[in-house]
Image 1 (tube, helix red, strand yellow):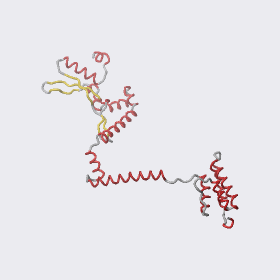
Image 2: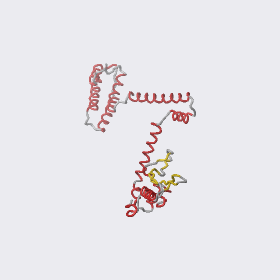
Image 3: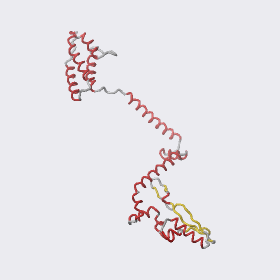
Image 4: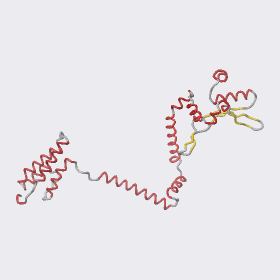
Length: 268
């Protein structure tokens, strides 16, 4: 107390409240220091008052025989704007006026904003998850459905279940849908489709080379073209060193070759 009164002569609210109570008690007047919070920060988005340690404050209470315990704040005599404006606004104004002690607070504006956002999330979690009771559920139904009748709630549940099942069905369809063939497989599939018109279908486990050999035995005149086509298909499918331009060129050659394929019944 001596250091505060005679050496530093500056301090926080608890220093002034403590000195005030010290002198009153020395004069025989009952007094005590009270600690709590003064002010807060109103969050308009969530409509609640945020009280943090930045709002901590200390003041005094004095016993008067005719009135009982009365509140007195000696800080208001030293820095009345601290009490009238609150801690944050007081610091902001002091920062704007160049007060050295307010520089750190001004630099922490981003952290303050982040802290407020986190507190809003925590408040929402407390309100809508941990404290979500039956009455809040009914109020939510009434707000969105226009009433609390059971048929309204049942309709909402039915629509929600239909949406969930629809999403689930879409996911199943998406995972099992037939995928388009790769580009380097399309020329060979076009050949299989052409030969299918003549009654030839590649058997399970039959390689492309075996397939064209089987067709060539029935159409000897088409055997060279089919063999060349199968060789080009093998190159297109299995030669990994080909670049995209080479692959496209090979595909064009195969399409032109396929356009010349004709299986005449008389040549069989």
